[in-house]
Length: 423
Image (cartoon, rainbow, N blue to C red):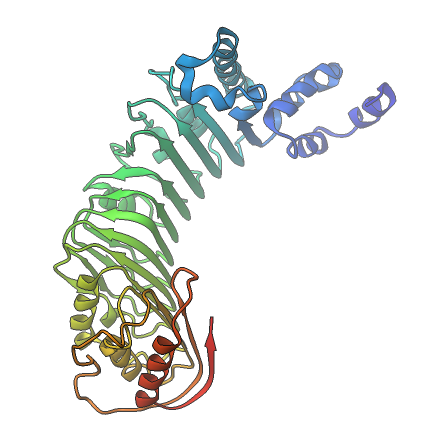
């Protein structure tokens, strides 16, 4: 950029310049202070903090951080200096920026193995500037868990909070209290949530509409909200019996490893889209299907025989799925000899249009000696299915014998099938 171009841009109003700088990273925005006297403090009014630790490391240096003790002296110094530069810029930006509210914060920080006392206290400083959106990614770390400061959970301006802590040891999030009156969306990844977290969360977040927990250890026993519309629990481990009660919930997506007891759904009359994948052998109670009667799309991934048996018991509490148009069932059992759950679901879904079955194992038709477990002797026939899709859970190849057996069984419970698609 030559002097003429710089002078031309410099004549623009401050609001326009800060808008232009908001498209740069914070590191790049701060570097514009050397252009001229006019630019010295413009960066301090940019409403976005966007800083990535990777931008402070030389090419190749980041790769040897996991084996820090084996690095050469130059490599060690480079890693140390990357930390110093990151912390210096972060502190300088937060201490010297204009006292206007931040709109958005995006920060990615890698903690190296030598940082035994690494601090993320700057998160509190970020919260003091009252941003609308905070998105924090922290990776690496030592064998010590991170100490996440509390102030971020009392930021009255926040609408969106996303914290991912990919440390070696999961961080326990245990704030003294939670007071986020404007929060609409909360996403937490790779953390441990203690038994009182749910009470603090829903008391302190009266506007929370979307909750997403990924790869978290959950020790609380309830999710209860009058305003929550979307709940996503992905690859979470559940250590207590949990009851979910959300009358305005529209979308429910759960991939859960049940470590103890089970799950109960209650007051879910608004649910439309449901995707549930369950794993675990130590399951005493499932109370799911009775609360899914208004769903239009239902996906059930059943990870163990114990869970399938619990769902078969739960089907007795089920009302008709009068709105259900699409049903997907995935499971690790031979459906050609155990069709009971599928038959019961068909019976309770009078308006179903599409059925997809995802199978796991090869056909056992020739070796199976036990009688088929079907619908318990209850005679019924579904009027019409537009589409039936049959495929392998993990993109494998199904035997023709298994496919033929499944189609034959479906013919016993469905009067007419439009298309059969083998995927």
